[in-house]
Image (cartoon, rainbow, N blue to C red; front, side, top):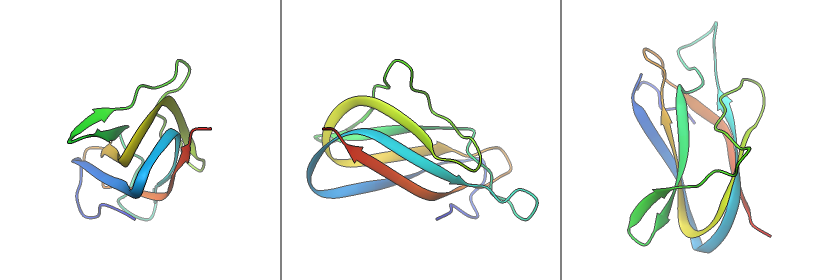
Length: 109
């Protein structure tokens, strides 16, 4: 999916689960069509979880960081949260749009 034709803005996408899940990991494979189109990896991104009616950022594990590397999954590990909804928020690069080829979340064991 892409956020075409929005450029340089902050956009989001979310997973809404039928029942609360305890999650601790997310992986994103960014869409980037450099040389052919107007989509690039985001300037920055973050994950938020729905706590009741309030969105809260996840707390990344010590060695985890938000990445936007090409041609690979960018994985973050965070303190487990139990929620019915998780949101990926992306700040698009100035003058460019962006998108996601695949986004997964993993439940805590």
